[in-house]
Image (cartoon, rainbow, N blue to C red; front, side):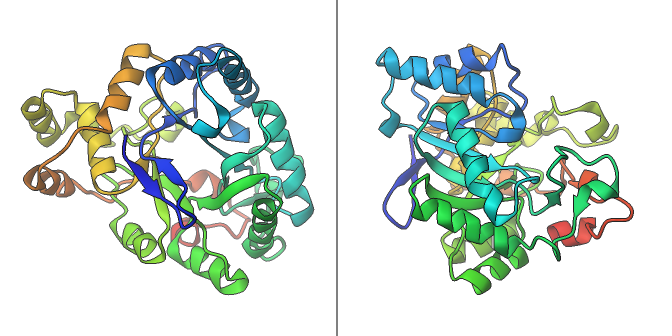
Length: 316
């Protein structure tokens, strides 16, 4: 396994298990299996609705001697309806209780979007709270406090643009340690990666294989398919591995972390092995040339008429 080093020399495993869309009833077994296969990096979030079951899997794995807490890297995320300063510690403590942990290795602001306390997902613009009312600076200061009190060893953001991160840094003096975003061969996020590299911000790729199992309402009929790429298929044949492994290896080789989701044991093993696949400069160039700047998860579900959230100011 390769690792990316944070400023305090802690090491984040380059490949982990994503748990978005891992259904209750499946995720317990997936996490236990992943631990026995050698996974040490687990990506969670309150909004996924499965942290209690994941916590049971961690607890049982620790009791069985399959892993030690200090050997795992566990991430979770603050949801959009808990962005005010006084809400952040209670929200984190709910996550810790669900995961049966004393601390997180990494806690992220899930989206640069604020919802009313009672809303998990907005139905109308009245469920949205303007960033002029609850600014991201306030939320970030609350996250900084979570690192200072030891409930989270590291803090970062998710789905943030350079301008939003610059604003946090300017107003608090504290740089996010990680930015988790959609990132894959068709959305390589090259400008964002260059920015993060200059700030020593680790990037984590979600939806690295295209998230084909996301809700149908968030799919376009004509969207490109990563697994149809002839370049990927050719390199997979050259390397004697799967197309998915080529995509994951590309993410690791370029210096990012990546969190594919699976609940299938053979796929879990295959994904983990991808972290150790080496790609030649020529193969990396061929894969880099596939970029289309195409988002599968556009975030337009936050951009409701009547709110001040727009696609442009979400990503721009």
